[in-house]
Image (cartoon, rainbow, N blue to C red; front, top):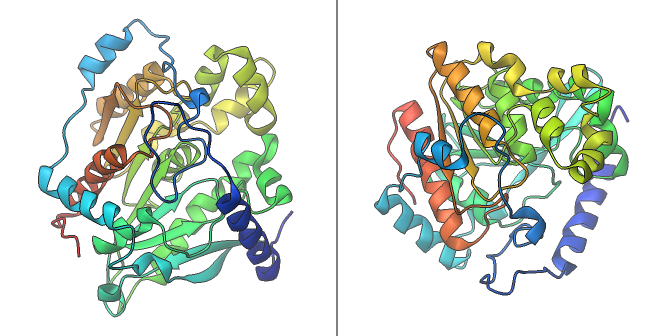
Length: 352
């Protein structure tokens, strides 16, 4: 699939949104109810276990090397208020526009939300990557960033679940070329929000699949984004799948490649391969109970980047799993994310 018409992908968005609303979540018995818009797998036991540790350092040693830190209490308290309100008082995220950009002959859809204070001025932009294909309805995540004065962009690049063909458009050997959508999006967004010759700062953000895209945006496509924050992301796909349980390796071989037969493909699509290209500040956050990441690989990635005097950090949160959608987890992570981008660009965190 080389192009996706507006009518086709909008139809797919509507179908996905309706089916998502009808989904009944399966929760662990002791878990509190997730917030509005929580990922359907947030409380699945399959997403909670133990992160992979394969190097010389134990999990406890890695926790000590990259410790959990408390976020700013003022930011956390304000995020908790906005989250608890659930959009009853203010719903900036419910309004947005659907646009598209080109990467060669491929048309990529994206959703853009602009907070009222940024309609006529240059504001920083957060490009959020995930595997979904959602429209511009209310959601707490863009709401938090809009309230902090960021334009929020969600690209639906090849591999997103807009329809079956689009979801498969980055599988296996197609992935290296499909990943160039990340670079094309960064360049489009920078041009799109330049005003009177002033270009905005552009950040890249993502969890899990989107975290991998974030790391690639900051390494393989260095310069396309000014700062990045990756959560629950794999830094070395070859190493991870080589050491992962067999069932997980087999389940993802079609999408990513088999480490036993396609090692070069996995290396070509791994952020660690391009770590020497890193430009701009980058932060990683991983959960100690996340069976879909490798703490050892992340340790190697960060140490290698720091050896080149790159501005990169890692935080391991022992109690977090792969998907953290409970209110206290959302507040913890997003307070750190907002503080990171504020520090990177020398601007205070002010939440409307």
